[in-house]
Length: 324
Image (tube, rainbow, N blue to C red; front, side):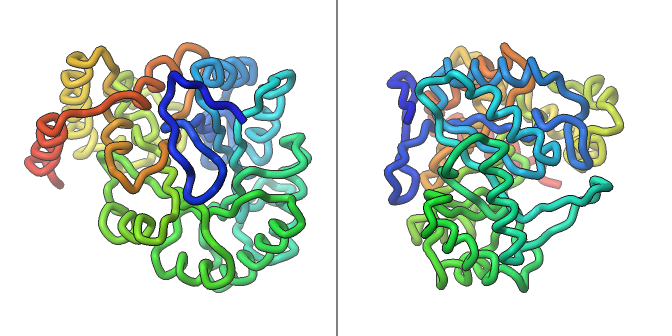
């Protein structure tokens, strides 16, 4: 287990894992696939992961489907020779066939095959946190969660988590086995989970790992109208409504506000965006991604950044005035 004293940590649920407030997300390093970020240089990916570890980050979040197994393989390559291993979290339920067509399954035999394949690709004997990527098909949630509980009993998995679940679905899973963590989308431009879902997680003492806290790069401060227009066709963000008008103009104006606040703290706009997510007491940690060395330096400071009440109010007032 890696804990760097320079980055704040929080206990994940009731586990023995104390995770840094930000973790490395490896969605983009999967490269070119149906919901990818475009082509990716594996050497850059490995350097970015190692840079994150050097900065004190002690957990990596990946998924089998990212790059159709490639992201997990890159994580394993990046960790070769690393003596103090980070926690590795991955996900199941999204599967693919020989034609690279993606589907969903929570059938017990499918879950077991996925787990075994992830163990091989990651070069580990046990997965620290294994998460259901999507509750799809909904009718198979109980079968899938029961299968995961069995894999946990077999010590192939340390802890079980869910991603993108609603309250009703989490209740169904908890009736079978405890949920360690929830991974929902949460950012300044996507606040849907704030009320019911985050409140439920807090009451039930379920850890929350927020994904896309910088809205998939939109709030980093590096995204411009020109960069959005130049996104390659195989980048999934090309069709995302937050990267299109009329929301794009509002979102770029928001970035300018975040940049102004960041200047006061010596931080980037992206770090302000992540710090805003982390200011919610229900949130244990947030996932930040990087595709090449140098990028992690612009986001890791969010782990230490404490926004003032008037800065949070300033952001909230802007969002209220510009609400769609």
